[in-house]
Image 1 (cartoon, rainbow, N blue to C red):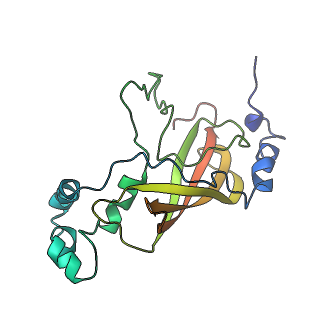
Image 2 (cartoon, rainbow, N blue to C red):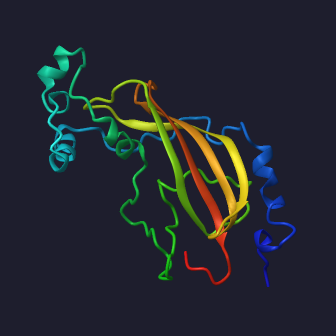
Amino acid sequence: MTTDPTHHPADWMAAWQPMIDAIGQDFAPGLDPVDGDPIERTTVRRYLEPLEFDCPLHYDADVARAYGHADIVLPCTALQSFALAPAWRPGETIFDSAERNAQPTRSAVSGVRSPLEPPTTAFFATEYDVEYLRPALVGDTLGRRGARLVACLPKETKVGRGAFLTWETDIVNQRSEVVAHVRSSFFRYNPHPGARS
């Protein structure tokens, strides 16, 4: 029988010490493969439709050029959609369990996973901040560079025992220009026995 060290009363916090010791380390110093889709006019238009976002910088290339841009500007709020790796690829199985509250085997929105972390079965995002530095344009392809751990705070909450992890990364275009600086936090944890997550 295997025991989960994060549930042992004396050891669960100590299991996070390797992550605490790694604060400041970049777990992905290179550029993630830019395997997302290029930003296209029709995709931007369809993003604008349900929002009725009527700013000509986002649909009229002539207006965008008049304001110094080479092409239509992607709204900042759509940036993350184009910077994330695809959630699914043909032939993949994302959910390999039919259990209640099963987690995907891989997720572009679950944050960075480090081999230094103790095992956890659940997570949720707690914070997301973005500093926008330059516009992304139609024709650009975006990717992510870096995954620097800036905080690890073990904590027991009502939902379980785990740690709040904060990461910093950059969103870059195909020219390696930094488009945005992202800081995100997650609570990774093991639910209390019998708790419903």
